[in-house]
Length: 139
Image 1: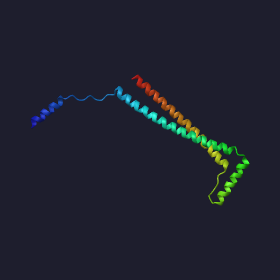
Image 2: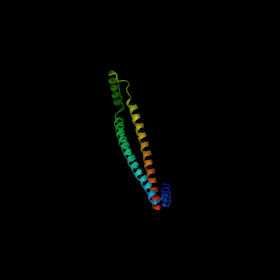
Image 3: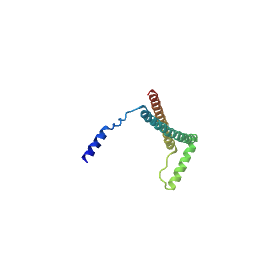
Image 4: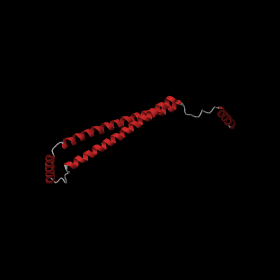
């Protein structure tokens, strides 16, 4: 039985070892191609978010424009009426129309800033994608 083991050992030694994996063009391209696909997906999600924010921004701006175009004395009357009704029904404090308008204006400004940030993010991703494509062409 010892003889069989030695024969087995010598036959193992004669077998060539598989080559170690080395980076090649195909594996590099698959990594960069996967990253490009990921970038495409991120771009779509960000663009969807931008579209949603722009829609909400337009809605808020329309509301602000509508209320801003109402003469101040009518707005004051509406605000007093709403405050009186809210107090009678015991629903707590009321918020002044002008305060609400200011809050909406801040929200619009924040949305504009967020949209600008997201657009910069999309541009950064596009640049990265171009660099990956150039890298692949150079391989």
